Length: 242
View 1: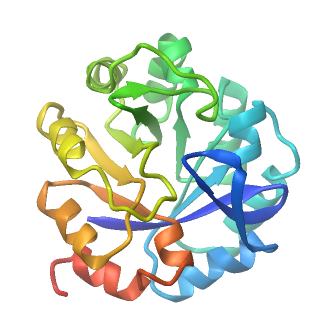
View 2 (view 1 turned 30 degrees about the vertical axis):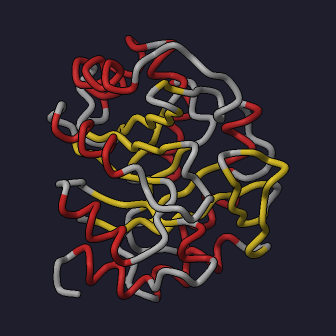
């Protein structure tokens, strides 16, 4: 299982939100590039980046250049999400910037044919974010709800040719109360997708629980930034040696 330190960017700063609410942000630094380098230097195998402004507004508000700089400075793989809602941006991030995996959310719901085409064009390089509250998917930077069931969406995603999803329980995100293991396990057991778990991870015990249900990865944000989770320990736990 891979541990993904999160670098969430808003207004050029590295921030963490609670349940995706912009007004709840805590700023952890004004140089996301240096923070990403810090996680790499501490042993991270993969970095998870979210353009929060892109997710909320659906357009670049200055964070794309920061993401480009992170890609240039880091040697480990990077996945990027947040406001990726058209083929041009997918192609730019993968072909021009050199991002290793692009994450789409809203696009997978509103334009399944486009995501399917991109999955064929870039095999293994497109992931879908499933951000859910009470089992129902939220879209457009979590600003809009839907009536789409997360498990139903998984089966649609498989039909698009996607092999990786990122599941976030919105009610747990940034709350430091632990991930939703029960629903995560249900997603993993009812799909052939690689499921990466996000939201609320705050201890090594959480990492072990996620590994034990067969998850492909775990994204850690506030747990790392608050000091409640040590990255080296988390990686060791994910490997089953701690």
